[in-house]
Length: 319
Image 1 (tube, one colour):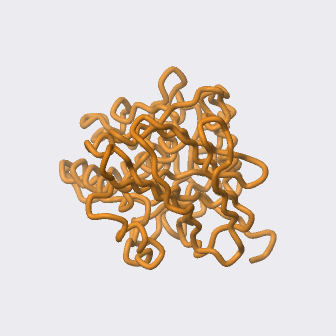
Image 2: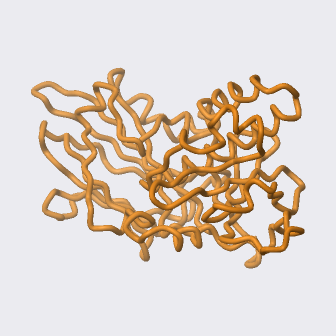
């Protein structure tokens, strides 16, 4: 790969996104309008998923893009960020070199994100961000080459919201509730993380064979919030044991088209006091890394930390 090649953030599109898009599309009077709304819905859902993974609150159903009448009347793909404004998520089809901005989205937007689809519509690339559009009415097309990296979006959002991994607020993931099918928003099913689970069967074999009563969830992380970084999937599997104990398995996987993890990623287990109990460091040929299985008692807390040397993300869990 040459040093001038640009890497874009890839977001998988699961079944839920397509179900919603299909419901909106079938209500339209023409196939052309249905296709437009289908792509707009997927673009909005992709950006919504990305911000959700970063713990940034959005109001998905409050935008015009989710309103049946406004969908039919306008070409809109807006995502509401509460107390901040509307972010326009414009779809870009394969081969296109510009973003098209219809007149109805030229105002009242905090910025525009370009969302490029692949042919199968099972994954998108977030190509970049532009904050404002020139005032000239002729400027309804934005060249993709003029986009800024996606992290420029966070200049529009207060630091405590835009960089939750670096904020002082620390939330705890309640693993006990996972056995009751209650999950935090950022912890999602594996099918929503990996487009093709079959391709991951070898790497996930220790998860799938963990226990018949196990619960598995994943969180997508993007160290440093940089477009050039491929996102990673942090996978946690838990299984109940006698005497209110729980066994835990933790893995870190690459996402998208990447086969191997970046080298020198550190995955460690910490006691509540901060003492490091386990640590594993990725090598250039690792397609995943994992901690040794460990056990804990009900009510016990521990931390899982992922670091690339520049940025660190830490999650606190309670059993």
